[in-house]
View 1 (tube, rainbow, N blue to C red):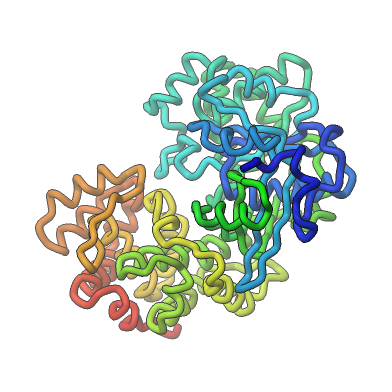
View 2 (tube, one colour; view 1 turned 45 degrees about the vertical axis):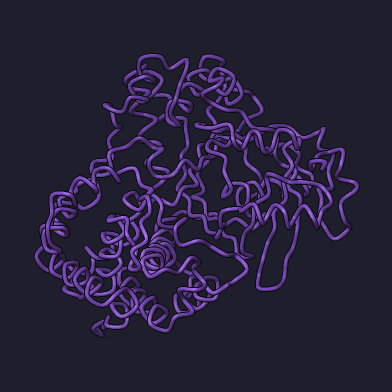
Length: 492
C-alpha cells in the first residue's frame, strides 16, 4: 500500500481537504519541540491555516526529544498527515501540509540547534508534558540533580532537554546577531510561559550570565491556554482511514470539532496574524487557564480515575452513567467558586458545552490515556481549587473524591481485580509508599506525605486529610459509582 505523500495527494478522494498552496515555497518559521498528536491536531492546524491564507512563512519543523516514532511516521510522507474531526456520526478529513519534517534530538542535537537558530525561525512552540520542563514541582526551580539537566550544563552544544535546546539555539542566535525567537509553551500548565522562561534563564545563567541577561531583556515567553480533545490514534483508526483514502497514513490524528488557543500578546519578533486565524490574543491568560484546568481538565482527571477503576474504557461511557454525570456537575459546582472568569466566558454555557464534548462517542477518548502522569497534573487540576475552597471555609467533597480516586489508582488494581501498570513518573515512589502501609488510613497518610504532589500546608490540613480519607474509604467500601452518588456539595 502506498503512503500518503506529495506524490499521492492528487489521487485522494475529492471530499478530503488538501493543502491549496505551493508547499515548495513554504519557509520554516516555526520549530515545535515534542511533536505529538496534540500539536498536530491543534497548533499545526493554525499554522496550516496561515499558509492557506497566503502567508508562506509559517511551515513547522517538528522535533522529537525522545524517540524516532513520529519521524518514522511523517518523514516518509513528506510531513503530510490527515486530521480527522469526528462529531457523532459526522467525520471531516483534512490533510495538513504545514509540516516540514521531523528531527530527532538525541540522534543529532547540533542539527536541531542549527534549525532553531535559522534566520527564518521566529517561533518555537513546545508540548513536552509537565515533566519535560525539568522544574521542581514544589519550588519551580531547575532540577540541577536531573541527569539530563546536568549534562546540558556540562555541554550545551549537545543538549538533551527542552530548556537546553532553547538555550543552545538562543546562544547561537545571539552570536549570529539575530533577535531571539518567541517561545510558546502549549502544555496544560498554569503559568506555562513563566515556567519555561524560568527554566531557560536559570540554565543560561549557569552557562553564560550575559546570555541570560539578553534573554531576559529581549526574549518573549507568552502565557497560553490551549483546548482541544485529542484521543490517541489506534491501529483501527489507521486501517479505517487507509480504506477511505486509498493510501496509508501512519501519522493521522483525530480530534473533536472544538478548538481554542488563547495567547498573551507578547512576542519577540514576527508572528502570523493570529487574530485572523481565530486565536484569542489577550493581556491576561490566567483566567482562561484556570477555567480550563479546573473545569475541563479537573473533570477529565476525576472521570479518568473513577471510570477506569470501575471498568469503563472511554470518557463518553463514564458520563453516560447518571451517578458519574451528576458527580461531574458537583465537581464543577465546587471548582466554579474558585474562578474569576474572563470577560466573554459564560461559565454555565461553558459547562454545558464541556458535557456535550465529554459525551461525544466518536472520539473514543480512553480513560487510561488521561490517567497517565497524574502526579504531574493533580496539583493544578484538583489541589489548587481544593486549597482555595478550604481557605474560604467551603466544602471539598467532590474535589476530595477525585484526589482519592487518584490515590486508589496508584494501587494498580481495578475494582474487578484487574491489575495494570501505573504510568506515571512517580509510580515507583507511590508504590514504595503504599507498600509500607497496611490500611486505608495509613495509605492516604503515606501518599499525602508526597511533597512533589501535595503542598505541605495542604497535606497537613486536617479538613483536607479527613475529606480525602473519607472519600478513599467510600471508594473501597462501595466502589466508584456509589461513592460518586454519595457526593453532596453544600450550597454556600
